[in-house]
Amino acid sequence: MSSLNTKSYKNTVSLTKHKSTSFLISLSVLVIASLIANPALAEIYKYQDENGKWHFSDKPTQGTATTQTAIASSKPDTISKDIHSDLLEQYQPNNPIEKATLSAVSIETPMMKGSGFFVSNEGHIITNKHVVRPAETDQWKELHDKMEERKKAYKDAEQVLRQEGVSIGKMKKQLKGYKRAINRATSSTQRDDLKSEYQALKQEYDEDAKEYREIKREFKIKRKNFNDARSEFNRKSSRAMFATTFRIFTKDETKLSARLIKISKDHDLALLKLDGYKTPFLPPQEASSVHQGMKVFAVGSPYGMRDSVTSGIITRIDDDYVVTDTQILPGNSGGPLIDESGHVLGVNTAKAAEHVSAEGFGLALPMELILKEFEGHLNTIQVTDHADEQ
Image (cartoon, rainbow, N blue to C red; front, side, top):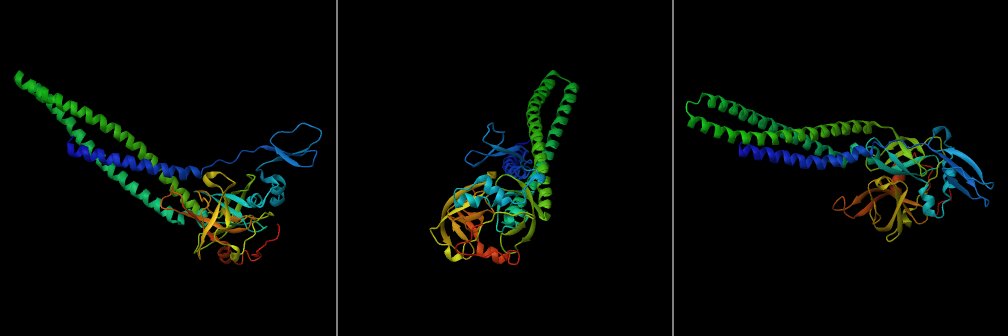
């Protein structure tokens, strides 16, 4: 194997290995996130103590002072139509923030997880467009382009492997030629010289052939993993592009199905609806009441941890965004940004930072824009300084 070919071969395969491995890790996170299994069913018991306070347990409680009722979690035929009352009874929120979390939902799509929140007692849900249509986002396009780059890199590496296979084959033929020459040698001196050259070439051949087989085997494994991941990515992209129903989870992990009502053409917004249920909802805060330094909270499912809250302040207010130092993490997208009284100021949309892993500012689309965007669907919602109790 020539030093030039060996160097080109090794560098190309090594580069492919390094970049494809990093890429496949990122891709695997995306694929695995959309393959979460259905939650297990379990018996949940609710009971009242002697003071009349309700409690919930996964086991029957012994005692004469309790009245117990077994309820099944996540079974469609046992789900109450009044989600609002059920959640209030189950969680008995102690403050406006806890009460606001009753209106937040987790959303799972064919490609990703996100958040959303009810904005009416009739089941209207606000979320981000990129949660329900990830294939239309810049992030998806960037990932798609990287996949195409990796696809080309694999093809280039495969060509190098093919050329090196030819070189290995030529060396093998040379060795056979040496054997024939040794057998035809007419003197011991000539035979010894040929044997010496044969042994040197044989040693080089054995080392190169072994290295070639190992790298080829590793290459095939990584190429198969990439092709499988790419096929899964394309399949889920196709499903996500045309999905009209989405799986949502309420605060108590009840699984339901919401339908798509409208996707914004100009903004990162989407409107879903859960039909047939009375739902808790977040009353909108009037834009004139939103100001710099105001304490705010983000509710969502960062990193898959449902029903999580982070806090911060409003750092600035632009025409298109409410900017906050509240942590906006992967999975928070589509969740509400609320004030201390539990009124919703906007929908958390993105994080502005120099790097993905760096600290940054959260961006939320204001409710005023959302209500205008979905005017006609949400025409019964009133924006007030002091919204009525739900």
